[in-house]
Structures are given as C-alpha cells and as structure tokens.
Image 1 (tube, rainbow, N blue to C red):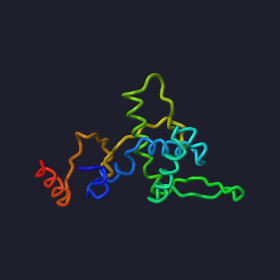
Image 2 (tube, one colour):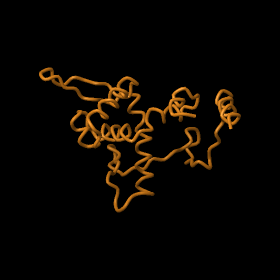
Image 3 (cartoon, one colour):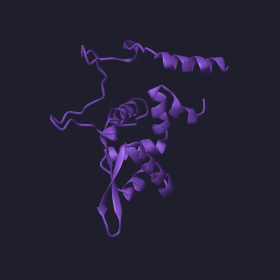
Image 4 (tube, rainbow, N blue to C red):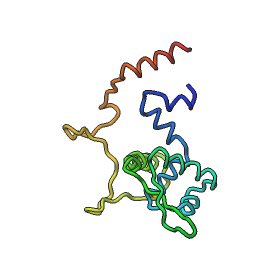
Length: 159
C-alpha cells in the first residue's frame, strides 16, 4: 500500500495518518493549541520553512481543521484558528504529549496541562462512556467492518 492509498482506505486511522502523519502538521497543531495563530509565530516555533508551513496551513484550511481570519488589511495579514474539527484533535495531541513525557522525557515535563476549573494537572485517560471504567488496549476489542476486512483480504492476496 502506498501513502497515496491511505486517503482512500476505509480505515479512519489510515485516513487520519494520511493527513496528520507528517511532523510539521503535528507541530503546527501543537502550536495552535499553545495559542500561536500567526504565520511568523508558527514558523518560528515549529522551525518549518516558510514554503513547508504555507503548504501545510493551506491543506489544514482546505480540509477544515483551521480557518484563516484577517487581522490586518494593510498589509494583508491572517491568523489561523482551529475549527471544531481541529479542536477535536486535542486529545490526540495531549495523549502524544503524555506518552512522550513517560517514555522520552528527561526531567520534568516541558508542558503541564491544567484544568481551568480547579487548577489540577490532568493526564489523558480513556474510560468507557457507559460504565466509566478506565480502559487500556487490553480492555478493548476491535470489530472490523466487512468493507475493511475485504480491503485487508485484498492486501493479503497480493503477497
């Protein structure tokens, strides 16, 4: 399977990887969640070249993850704001941060996530929405759709 095939895959993980499976995309998202919205700030904080950053911002806007808003007409300047679709990727970014803190961190975390309501440090936690029991991968069962199973069978038959 080529990277181009990911966008056409019935698996939503594959389709999300096709969009976000790029270091610059994830760095842009990190920065937007940290409050950076302007091109120069995003470029400075991510280290992406202006061309790379521009391409990715345009793609995130086209997909609907970011929206561009004008903040100056003379000269024309824009900010990039997360849409509802973009804000919904926050748990993924925070989970990556927690994984990195646990397995790659050296010293205290570079960022703490605090609940605005009570000021406590929070860690991402997955729980069953019905019984509220904490969940790990061992507590989950993946049920593959018939369409995805056909795709997987087709890949197996190619080898």
